[in-house]
Amino acid sequence: MKKQIAILGSTGSIGTQALQVIAEHPDRYEAYALTANNRVEQLIEQARRFRPEAVVIVNPDKYHRLKEALADLPIKVYAGEDALCQIVESGPIDIVLTAMVGYAGLRPTMNAIRAGKAIALANKETLVVAGDLITRLVADCHVPILPVDSEHSAVFQCLEPGNRLEKVILTASGGPFRTYTAEQLATVTKEQALHHPNWHMGAKITIDSASMMNKGFEVMEARWLFGVRPEQIEVVVHPQSVIHSMVQFEDGAVKAQLGVPDMRLPIQYAFSYPERIPLSVERLDFTRFHELTFEKPDTGRFRNLALAYEALHQGGNMPCIVNAANEVVVDAFLHDRITFLGMSDVIERVMQRVSFVARPEYDDYVATDAEARRVAGELVDKGTRTSSFPES
Ligand code: NDP
Ligand code: MG
Image (cartoon, rainbow, N blue to C red; front, side, top):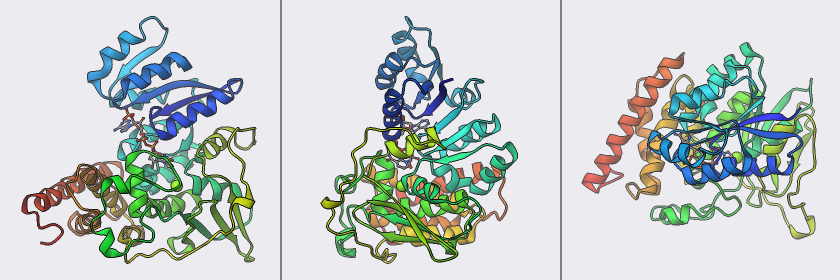
């Protein structure tokens, strides 16, 4: 029986690479549902090629174009957020790949878990926002979460059943500004930030990588996925991105997973687990790497990493506050409405201003997300109007 896969965000970087994996194994995998937010033409092309049972476009204005373009095929066509949340519950689906970006991934992921689907988790924001809630839900519904994020897939591949972890060591490339001084960081542009040295990814995560918020989020993701305390998670900057992450056991042994930086491997492993199956990614040529280097992350220059650790220590709805503020400032940075360093200033202030909830439930997260977005938006506007950002 072929595994039926729903890809939430099939038109993105992870989504398109997941379709490449499916195309490489048509005997094993089938795309059951494909979804996008806006890029309707790309979704049409994908639907014509992969012939899913259903497609969903979140933006309802694009529905008619999608419906009309697929009228000659037996493909169900839906629009809107609710449709996205419902499609994941379809009976035949085995795996839901959450490859959409941001907080919007939370509700469909929760629905998929409740419907008993295995989750191939790329949308790390879901665990950042509501890690506690998701962990409880997953335990109640007995569904596996298979990490797609390369670091977490690496850790997952290193685990030994029955042997406790002493430490998780997440590697970070350091991004395009690893060697920049604070003065240089003050004037970097979005074009520079969008140019990641090792990975080609969607815009939001690329900015998060440049600011190291991505690594902060990955620390939170690791905390929930592997049940470790924040102080058991270490970040090491490793610019070559050959070691995708490591684990340390109680006897001091360290295991690492290595490979070329190519997301198709972790995506496929989430689909094929516990089996490994062939994949046509480039092989690692050790003679090309004369050295693998490691350094401590600099949380003075990259304050987001420190803010993320702080949010994780505080717990409650604080990570949700950080996530919402981050989504607002990243969007503002991509629209030239805030400076690179101004992003951390706003996040820090939003953390201070939004009401803290120690034991949030779903409705608290929804309210927190809305409040944090509002406060962050006001701070960005204020900075833009007075042009005195980041002061005041
Ligand atoms: P992209 O921006 O490339 O793609 C995002 C996808 O989600 C697109 O299909 C987009 O549709 C869709 N989408 C965007 N907003 C919404 C929304 N509000 N509702 C529904 N669908 C939406 O992102 P990436 O593929 O880079 O990243 C996806 C997720 O995977 C993120 O959470 C990221 O952190 C994570 N991840 C990505 C990695 C990578 O290498 N890219 C590595 C590790 C994790 P449309 O095309 O129509 O806009
Ligand atoms: Mg990663």
